[in-house]
Image 1 (cartoon, rainbow, N blue to C red):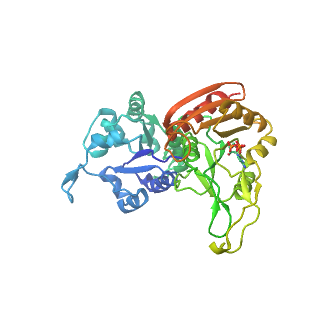
Image 2 (cartoon, rainbow, N blue to C red):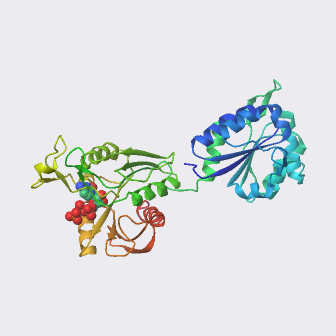
Length: 401
Ligand code: CTP
């Protein structure tokens, strides 16, 4: 869910630095990129080896990289980050940050940063309630920095009070919320089907269609980027999906897709059937490869289950169901009929007539037809952008209904 998010994790010299490896693991597990920048003193409390192994990036401490004869640009680092978190933050570095002192890499990165800055202090209770600390805390907040308040409890000194670094899980959830924009899709479960299905004739041959699966994959990514938990049921596709918040179930035939979708539908708040499910499947699958000399006079086909129609019939209230329609004639009329027959909230009409649209292209041109009669034409553009438009439509018009 944090895939592609870039976080600079500033560590200063506090005993609480031992908690940071746990935090890095949580961030990495969600797909975030983590660059650790420490003050020199921080490394008395946690080893660079642990930090670099977990973050999968070398730890930056000095301005100069003597080994490679280069220097670390604090400006580039400051601009690279989507968010900077300083945790644990000592009274010393806090005072320097409040006054703009720039005598180490971390402090200069903070001065160059344009992204949100979060800081989680850790110190003894008397230091934390000292007037200078209070004033520095206020100064940092007046810069727009966000305070992650220390917790109350036993401190390293043996005293009890406020000053403990907040637990990694709590810091993680604050950072995650900050990085994922407020979205109605957070904690929503989305079910998407994508790709073609292959219907076997014999062990080597099948009947299929030209769907690449890209449209459905882009939809899965667009929902995941908005904080949703996504299940993607994917037919044979050359594309792979590597996003920790998308769970992919691979299927081959229409029957397998039916089974997989049915098992996941119950928990789905929103379902989008973008797959080009085969409407027909061979009645009989030959166990052995059909030999040329034996010939094939005919293949008898039977109809597959219309998955979307079945889902529509058991939809119930409060759930959103979206279908696709691929038409070559009487397009709008046919799509509207499908919208009604399959009890959908929205249908995305693809036309095969437009150049660059439909199967096998990275672009598409679609028309959104909603159950309330709304019609929106989306011009030819990359499927990733079309996916975002569909997600935005669902967010703005269907979720709030
Ligand atoms: N669909 C489905 N199960 C099938 C066939 C289609 O769930 N066996 C879904 C598709 O995923 C799509 C929608 O139904 O969201 C419309 O698919 P399309 O092929 O355009 O229409 P069909 O209903 O199959 O009708 P026809 O082929 O006659 O146009």
